[in-house]
Image (cartoon, rainbow, N blue to C red; front, side):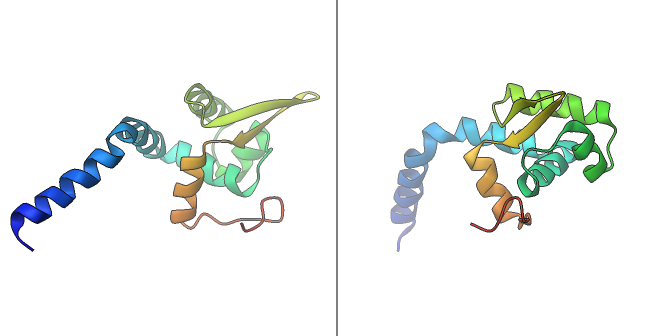
Amino acid sequence: MTGIELEKIGSEALSKVQATIPEWIGVFSLCADETRIKLLIAMHAAPGSSVSQLAEATGLSPNTVTQALATLHRAQVVQVERDGRYRRWQLVHPGIHQLLHQLQAPHSVVHPEH
């Protein structure tokens, strides 16, 4: 193949995904933080965890977990549900879910292989 053909192929590939690039930049930015990626991995394996459960699982303070979850919630990556006096957190962003699979984030009995 000539250089021109390769340039055309590259240009066509870019034009097909151009609209999704800003979203993926945001996803990568959110996942680039060690605290947030630890929480996302923990939530992937144990959806419906409370702040205290996530803090225990990750070795982070509850305050740190709460702040990171607020960031992820504002970005619509996680959702929260009230369960009595607890708030249960769950990963809802399909792109980050796929990314965690690429990182080989493990599954569990509460979130089996799929």
